[in-house]
Length: 303
Image 1: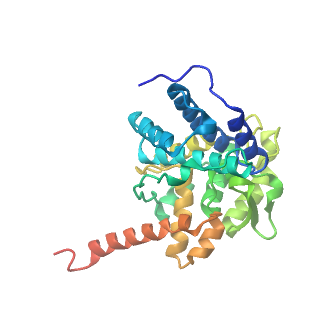
Image 2 (image 1 turned 90 degrees about the vertical axis):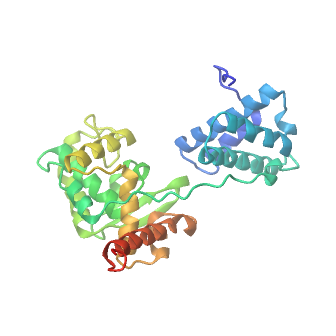
């Protein structure tokens, strides 16, 4: 396998595209970094084959797909690379830099349907019970866990919350999702009470340096890694053997709402999904769980 150059490979068109994603579309730094990595991989391939970016054809892209497969990329990673290229060439067409879109003939690889891990209501309760509420870190973590489950937040949305995003009177939280898209999410009374007490009585104890709800010992914004690490500790203390991440609470939130009778459109709005197809995976989770219950309890299934 050919080794990538030690110095970054770049191109004015790619730089312009990444700037467009940042300024015009308002994508997060993490998303843009991912696009930049994928585009750099493509530029390295073009460099090795002595192809010019401005004259890329569908045949060049077929060769690139083969190149990625030889590197051992799975279907999901391959689909991500192709998504970056689709966005880039669509941008070039809009800017009239190119007159043809070579990606239009490429098909995405078929992705296996993977159902998200979901916690039972009892498992959620067990994890929520672990933080020690008499300490500032414990109360912060309990509030954080309550909010993850009560509002179905992404971890990036959780750590980006500012105190002004919560209205204690209405129990509503303003959330900024992917691409800076804003949505309003209600939280139940217990979670709202934890958040209200935390902001009023416990957050000042962190001596805030930055204006975020959840802070570390230095009064700065809590990181994704810190949230993940804390969750792992509480999951272990609760005696749960499942693989649990911050996103597991989001999956559990959606699944439990549907179990309780919520309609798919409402869950889509609460999760901030642009496309309802992204929400429909939770109906598969429900169906899978129903099949398990049926097999376990139906008398003919046990024969």
